[in-house]
Image (cartoon, rainbow, N blue to C red; front, side, top):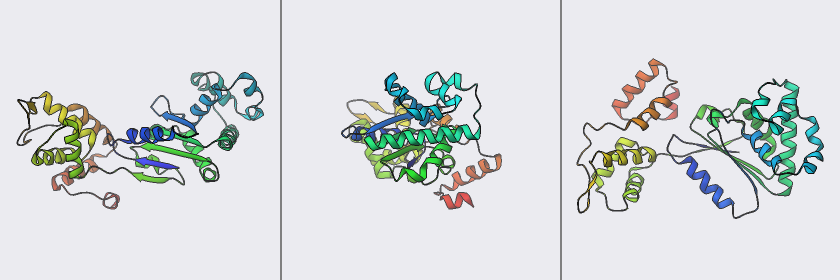
Length: 275
């Protein structure tokens, strides 16, 4: 089980898509699911997708389906809406988890099974509980679960997971990315300005570059011209809203501390944040 952690715009989806692209050259069962506020039953949705590929005869011959709960039966063979009307008991959940575990381990005997689950900050509690139920035995089978999230607290709820952090760009990496975006030379001073305003986040770099172009601060007049400074420049509304949304859970006191630390402009370690 691998959990990919990074802030919004750091390229988690691109990394997972590249990972999947390379896997397509081999023989695997690949299940790719993106969690949203509405669609968040990751594993059970992927099992439903697999069952849809089977014939009625193959489904009828699968006796393990006899043990699943009424809620799971409705979800798999009717709709998620139909399943919402049923509240499973602890025994029901245990039966459904056993069914899912058995199905996945049997699939893995045929060929390796790879789950790609994006945005697990929206993962349903039952799916989270299933991962922990299944986590101890994953390593004994040909199964890999690769997930991405912006929420470190959610990732820490998952047992036996390898955590991989996607770091911000360094100044040199930001400069290389900016030059790749414009497909040409860009002054070092301007690259440093953009790196400073974006903190090395590629999403913010793109948004700022687009915004500066729309405002005419980056323009083409026989060649590309870049502003000498960004004094008084305000980050565009869309990424700014994204930043404030991610901070919405902070208390007023914590937010005040962040404002003070922002003035100091010193990198903050996780240990310091805990303190």
